[in-house]
Image (cartoon, rainbow, N blue to C red; front, side):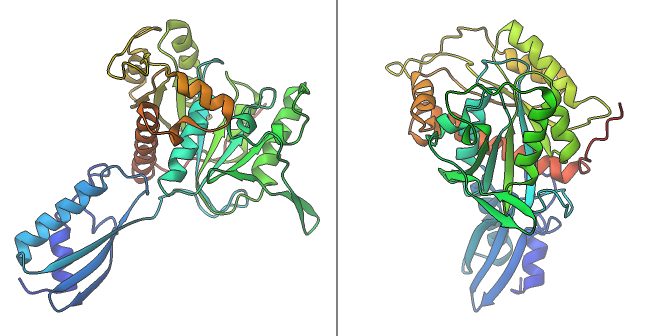
Length: 364
């Protein structure tokens, strides 16, 4: 077959994205084809830098190209990425592509630990990431990122004061913990907490982000309603532990997002504390809180089980020292990196298959 850009595109139209179930050419993922003699270069633009199928897609491309053009052609494939979005240009967070709610039905299931490690994992994979600590009465993000003593700066933009978020480990951060004394209790009624979240969303200089994670407080509260009334949420991630009482509350958290007036896509379920693995016996699993509770919850609602995070002593230690567990090689890093890749895939699938989420208007 004669080498030409048209012929190359025709060949690559036989290669499908395994997640989106469409060919790479239709998806616009093949770009910048250059032919110089028997050397051909082009870009494969993936839907996220966290794509775990990068090598599969690359090998499929090479196989089809060699079938049609032979092995004498030298192929140079650059695997790049452009995170997808369904958001239009909007006055609130105009340069943020995806807003992800991290929620749980009850406290103590490790939602903030999951949020922190997920944010760092996505950043390590090459994404631009921000994290809002929306738990106004119990902020934990400053401690978990080792920035308890930091205070954000403020700049004047017109008549408005804009907060510059703290950046740590490649993640932009905002928390009420940066604005109040560490030993002081934040005792606010619902409207005050909701006002703080609105300020974190609209009065912070977030800049360009691929993913803005919002670590919500436990349960279903004013904060959750304020979030969906302020910004269109791309999707929600539900964090639970395997035991029955946690699952009962996670049911409520998940069903809240599926209420017709809210209608936020649920990306899936994360089962935290899924099993205990001693560091000296890394291949052993002990199911202290029951087994596959998160899987059953995911199956009940027809959503993916995004990941199972083990109980490992280093996760607790990492939270206390402010050095997230995903930054240390081992079992927990693998679990969180796999989780980040899986969630990034689900966001890409959601953006390719579902319509954009609208800001919720809830009438009293």
